[in-house]
Image 1 (cartoon, one colour):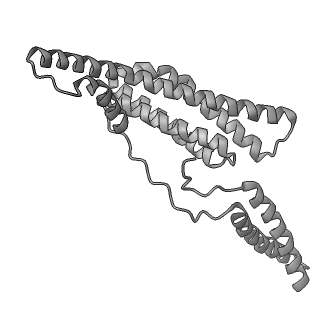
Image 2 (tube, helix red, strand yellow):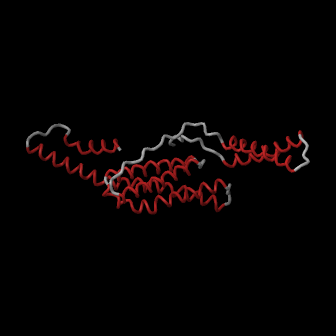
Image 3 (cartoon, one colour):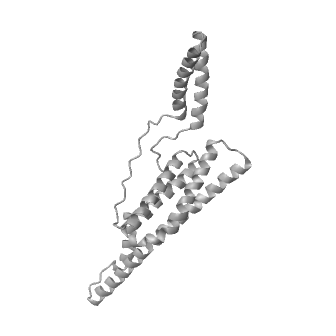
Length: 236
């Protein structure tokens, strides 16, 4: 699983801790000081509220972990339509990332990490070759928003501690769906790169033909297509 830079928090634990701290603080205050006026009650509730806030923070988990590095924005293409599409897509990926940080399920979180990474690669290809933007229309208009919607629903069910058979069934459906989404995102990226792979193979075939015609062929020329393809994938 990809490293989480922000420490996972537990709002439920924080709320429970806050309630306990508030009650204990009020009880302690009333046992020490007499309560006869409204101002004395207000002071007690105010101090107990402050203590409860710190209890919530401590119960939720202090974020003392390494901060996630800021992602560098992709360069502009000069095409306003493509640039707006990429910005919108990156905003959705960031929302997915935020939802992911609030989910405790390590299996689902791992799938979402892969989805985030693949989506960023897809946008990088489009920025480098804006003419491919039309190929990701459905990815932008349906796949990404639906993925975000599913993840948000999963997170809300966890926050509300929903454990009914229907809720558990829905969680399982979301987990299964994310596995399918991971494969679909990989397929989308592969399709975007397909033309590039064909262009490289064609160039190498022409090169081999010319080298043979000039009697300049050497050992290993036949493997150049595979090597070039592997190198490009490595650079990605």
